[in-house]
Image 1 (cartoon, rainbow, N blue to C red):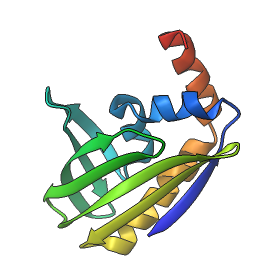
Image 2 (image 1 turned 120 degrees about the vertical axis):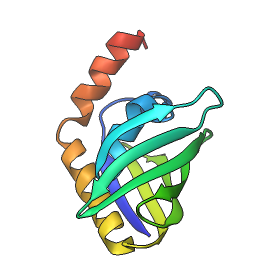
Image 3 (image 1 turned 60 degrees about the vertical axis):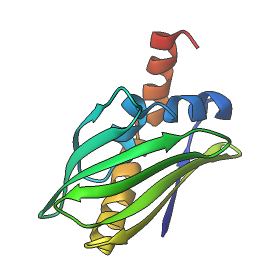
Image 4 (image 1 turned 30 degrees about the horizontal axis):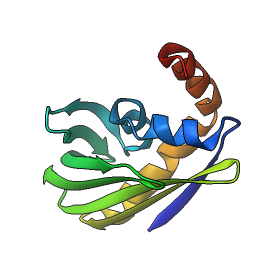
Length: 134
C-alpha cells in the first residue's frame, strides 16, 4: 500500500466531486495511463504500461466520503486492487492498494504519476470548474 498527498487550494467537496468522475480522474491517478473507456453500466477499462509491462484493467468507481476506484487486471499484469481518494484538510489523500504481479513497479508508477499531476492540479481543477460551471 502506498499513500500520496496532493495539496489543493479548492474546496474539498468540489475536488472529491471531480475525482469521482472517471473521465477526470483516471488520467491523473492510473499508473502508466494511455487511454480509457467507460461502458453504459458504469464500468471502466484502462489501457496502460508500467515499465515494460502493458496492462488492461477493468473497474468501477464507488462514490461517498471516500472515492474508491476498484479494479482487476484483465490482460498483461495479474492482480487486483483499489485506489482510495479522500480529503484531509487542504490535502487530497490518494492511497493505492494493489496485490499482483509487478506490485512494487505499479505502486511506484502510481506515486510518480500523482507527483507529476501535483504541479498542475490546481489549474486543471480551475479549468474543469469553469467548464462544468461549479
